[in-house]
Length: 215
Image (cartoon, rainbow, N blue to C red; front, top):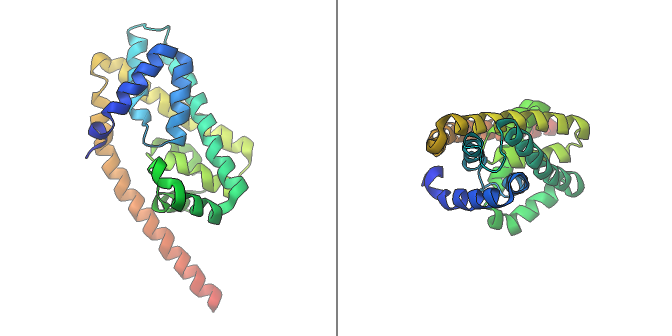
C-alpha cells in the first residue's frame, strides 16, 4: 500500500488539528511527525501551504516554513536525547520492545546508523528529506555526542528547506495539494532502494572491520 493511501486518515486528522489550533497546531503536528514517523510531513506541509494560499487562519508561506522547522527541531531533539542518554544497545532494546507502537524496527535504526556512518554529520541536513531516516538519524547523532549547536543548525536548515519546498508545492497546487503525496509515493520507492544499498554497505564495512581487528 502506497504512502498516499495508507495515510489519508492521518492527513485528515492533521488538517483538523491545524485548522483548529493554527500555528500551534502545526508545530504540534510537526513535533509528532518527528517522534512518530508514520505521521508524514508530506501530508501536512502541502496542506498548510494551501491554507496559506487561501489566507485561512493567518497562515503565510514563510510562517508555515518557520513553524514547521521549529516543530521538527523539537522532535529531533527528543531522539537526539534518546541516543545521547541511552546509547546504541539500550536503544536497540527499546526498539525491540516498543518500536512496533511507533511502527519502527531495528532495521530502520540500522538504516539510520548506516546513513550517519556513511555521510557523517551532513546526513543531519539532507536526511531530513528522507522518510523514517529523518527521525531516526537523530539517534546516532546523540550516540556519537555530536555537538548540539551544530546538530541544531543542520537540523534547522534541513527542516526549514524541506518545510518550505512542501509548503510551496501546496501553495502552488492549491486545492490539488494532495498530488504531492503521489509524487512522494514514487520518491519513497527510490529512497527505499538507496537505503537498502546503504545498509548493505554498512554491514559489509562492519564485517570487514571485524576481520581486520581479528588479524
